[in-house]
Image (cartoon, rainbow, N blue to C red; front, top):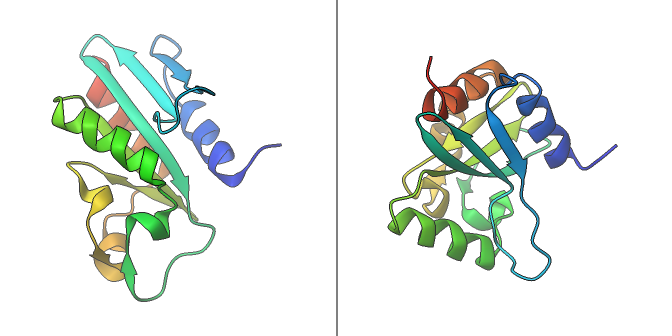
Length: 134
């Protein structure tokens, strides 16, 4: 069946247009590479997917709390510094949060973090908007 993270990624990708190219990335020789690559007429997008099985109630959201490893942070930050289109998409019950512009590496209060939540359809629309013509 898959992990909650994998199931979340698949749930998002099932809603993408068939003409939008996407690949699950897996490199057993080099850790840290983002989970998925999307390619469309407007450009590429690299996404690292994470999943929180319950909505945090208090505290601070950190990269460690999201489950980002040091190798993932190095890869994401490096590609961002190169000018690549990268994001971390965090699934939560009922939707998810898109973290761009190094927000994945910043400490964020839970209430602010959860205020960014959108539906699965919103995440899918965002991927299409970033990579494909509308």
